[in-house]
Image 1: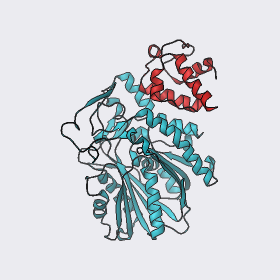
Image 2: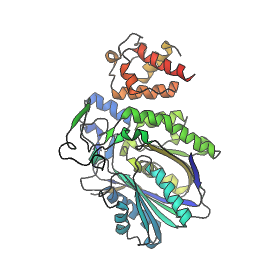
Image 3: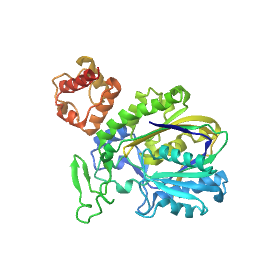
Image 4: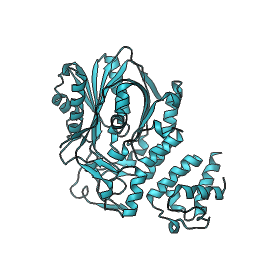
Length: 354
Length: 80
């Protein structure tokens, strides 16, 4: 069981950036008006931001990081670690983290690498950056997470198109002697790798001009090609309802904590029905479980930090908070972290004119 | 669990079903839109209410309200 803690790691600030174009699900005319109403209510996504073709996740993360570093007044040369968590990289090769290291004017002594995770990516990313900084005595690091998911989504797929939004985030971490430990419980189950998948374009199914682009009818209201993201709704749903609650409860009990000790539970913004079911399973009051789904949709590894930025920015800037963050989905991969924040820098969500 | 209780909770869960309008022999497809979204709402409901997990294959086999009840009941009994 991967339950562990990382001491002396402090979150100094969090920022988030979205592209300017807003898509309202009320415009989604692939399905009937009645179905659309039920869908919007059930998934809880009224609108989300769509990147223009050519805008990358790293563009959004770059803007978020620039704003954060300016507000924190951090010197670029002091940052020795940059981790980019995403499943929508700029190029097949090289890794995107190097491009960001250069673009953010970080020094050549900076460690930079990518992690390929989605819904669980923020929690996993915190565990990796925290552990590396602690063992390597690295004083300052940047965790950049997010995805452009809308480009890979078929308009004629009612199970995916209305759900996803694009976003990039930046989290500044520093090594601080008196910081409370971050406590993690991380898990994975590759048996469910097909539950959320883009089948073609990798090495297993290399891009093929005959078969990759061809659209297939998958079900009622669901047409997609092999470059489109494919969701097995019921599988993902059952997985999340089966695994998240015990993961959270185990983490709490391992460190002798109760749900009352947590100020806010910030879950990956999967969809409203799923998140509300998990909230009820854990018997959490709605006031402790903020949502940003309505305005940003499911933004993959950006969903946890963008929820903090959009829903808690004033509180997290002005008082100490104990948070439980939990991500679950593609992989399948899931994990939770309990951490304390002490008046962090958290500017409002930035709109990027792409 | 009993079927009367089961039905009244299902009626509460789905907005387009009026209270006291369902009976065990009703065919699901005729009573309301028994589509993927409503299937998920049903899965969420039985998960919270009865702490059981139902697969897509099992749901597809259920034709009537009674079938759904039998399915959930067999899962609940299987846990004990």
